[in-house]
Image (cartoon, rainbow, N blue to C red; front, side, top):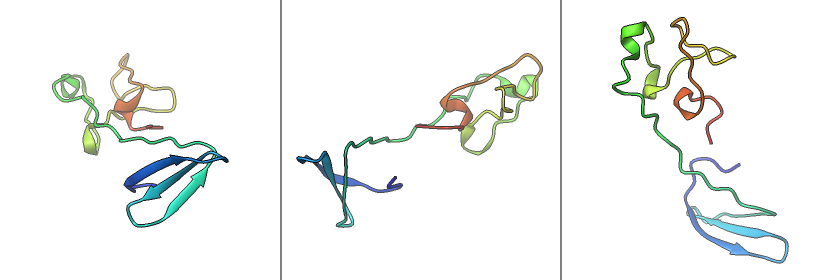
Length: 85
């Protein structure tokens, strides 16, 4: 993993790929997976009216089985901030 890095180029090689990072490093591997992050679209859902206070960044707090602090309200995916791609 190379976090918080900007890729300048990706080149296919005989062994896989070579990614040139903006700081001059070259990272080689069999595959390259690039992500750009996301921002949860949770504003205006009215969660505060049912007792769910959003976490910093707008993420919905959940437990290990996706329950929010409000009974019967569940959340899953990128809006929870858990295991984001």
